[in-house]
Image (cartoon, rainbow, N blue to C red; front, side, top):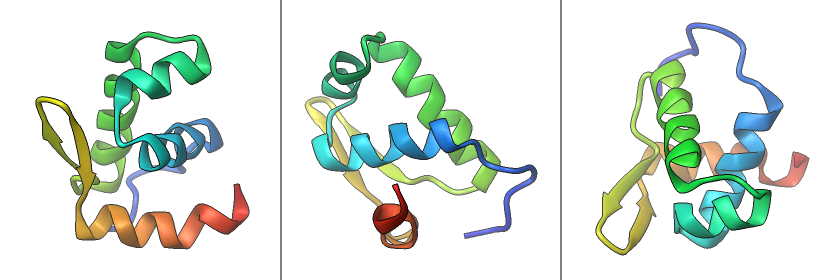
Length: 79
């Protein structure tokens, strides 16, 4: 995983952690009273900032990439 191009917001990491728990962006949206496209855009922006994919997208949910797992291990105890 490359160094971020800018500082990463805590909100982005909170959404990321929820996405890891649910492995479904629609459920993350329901948790935060948001929309699925908004969650997807937030995760995509985090991936762009980190310059690596964090999730593999599938029709019925997502799974973590190796970099996604590494990020989750780095932040899970701090959120």
